Amino acid sequence: MSGGLPVSLVCFGLLGTVAQDGGMRERAFAEACATQGVVPGTADYAHSMVAVHQALGQPAVDVFRGLFPSR
Image 1 (cartoon, rainbow, N blue to C red):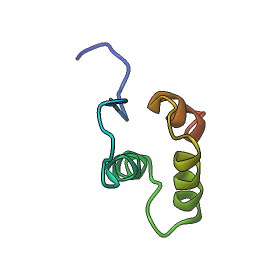
Image 2 (image 1 turned 30 degrees about the horizontal axis):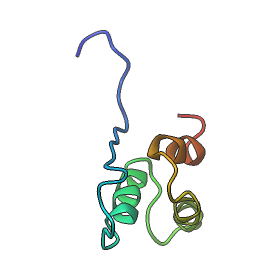
Image 3 (image 1 turned 90 degrees about the horizontal axis):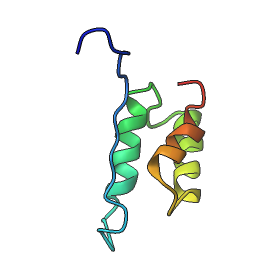
């Protein structure tokens, strides 16, 4: 892709297609956050996961906009 903006994070969701995901949603958010430098064991990680849990049912894009407002 030439001339376009650099992509640092891409997410897509399957909202409404999984009743119980066995923690997959949280793992997916954790992995996506790790690409932005937010890793397990840090205060930022704990804060991010609380926000992810509180945002249950909201579109993933809105959750990421809340977690990374400057990106």
